[in-house]
Amino acid sequence: MNPAPVVTRFAPSPTGELHLGNVRTALFNLLLARRSGGRFLLRIEDTDAARTRATHVQALEEDLGWLGLDWDEGPGRDAGHGPYRQSERGGIYTPLLGRLEAEERAYPCYCSSAELELSRRAQLAAGRPPRYAGTCARLDGAARAARAAAGARPALRFRIGADRLLRFDDLVHGPQQFDTALIGDFVIRRDDGTPAFFFANAVDDSLMRVTQVLRGEDHLANTPRQLLVLEALGLSAPRYGHLPLLTGGDGTPLSKRNGAQSARELRAAGYGALAICNLLFRLGHSCADHASLSLEEMAARFDPGRLQRASAHLDPVQLRHWQSLWVRSLAPEAAQAWLAGFLPAAAAPAQRAAAVAALLPNIVTAGEISEWLPVVFGGELRWESAARAAAEAAGAEFFRALAAAATDNADLTALRAASGRQGVAFFAPLRAALTGRLHGPELAPLLRAMAPALVRERLAAWTR
Image (cartoon, rainbow, N blue to C red; front, side):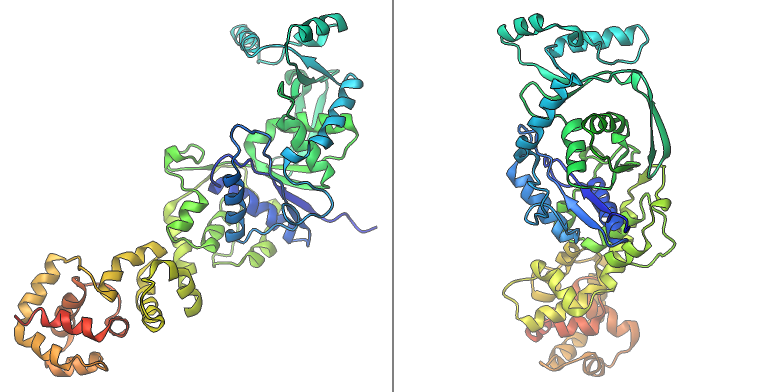
């Protein structure tokens, strides 16, 4: 018999912008599926109605598409396991929750938040790990009816049952075991009627035929609870793997507090999607190939056995490195498309193309082209004192000769001949007059990108 195809998934909660830790999770799951010709599934876990926004869902899908992390199954691509938003799956969860309650694998819990917090503090004070004390597990029918008559809305707790050691093999961390006596009965349906993460996430993985899941290390403690739920329902479980979290410069998990940028913010700053993916591919996954890779090449090189157990540090310097490699690999048409939104819309196509050719070697992110736009298209120059001094020292006669030679077809050879100068004596004052600086893009392509009238105007300004 042929083995079942690998099915992986990315299941974000749309409560904010997609950060790079989540992008890496999506990337690794996609590569795990692609390496074996499997399927990558997207599921939106939006049961937290108070924090979910439609705009976040739309932005999340747009960001994944921009990054090239296209899903084979999910919103807009139903493969028979939908719907793919948990808020639309209540009709699937309700009978399963009812079944667990009917079989006494779950029971209503009327404990308030204050009561639960008081119990937790008492256990900690006694030196015991906090777990649910089982208060409502012992309520009889009359007591439950009395609570309900008083207007209490119960949550539904999963009953752990007999204490046991639960074992599973983690894709990243290897063999694991948990003592169920330390877990305590846990909520699988909130008191507002919505399913809890432990329940909905596990059930959806099974019903959607997911075979392997890579997710953050913070979910490792959730795995025994989810395996118990699936076991009680007689449903198959995927094989889970837990990735160490990405950390920022301060060693803490990525967040706005330590300067982490979202995928959307990096896109707006002009970073390339493939540069981001190349960086993330090396964070927590060892790869001997140091070249910039396509997603197809990453999939061919992705190996779950090379997933690392130590946390990975997101270094902005490394991001610029991969961005630089990506920029240098761009064909002219691709470079123009990348920078199109940063160039003056009124400029002629030929000048826009010439500007990209001239400026591309001097930028890493698209946003960095902005400082050179006044140089090429006209505007106030940002003068360096050394550049101003070089232009002044060259003298008015030098610039009169250059201005006279700066015809519509003039190039560096003609300008150099007209000036009678060579080397630094020619290039330094010319560059200073045109750009306000002594360093920057090569002068030959820069001249081709600038309008001849602008060149003459800047040269003539030094003849007075």
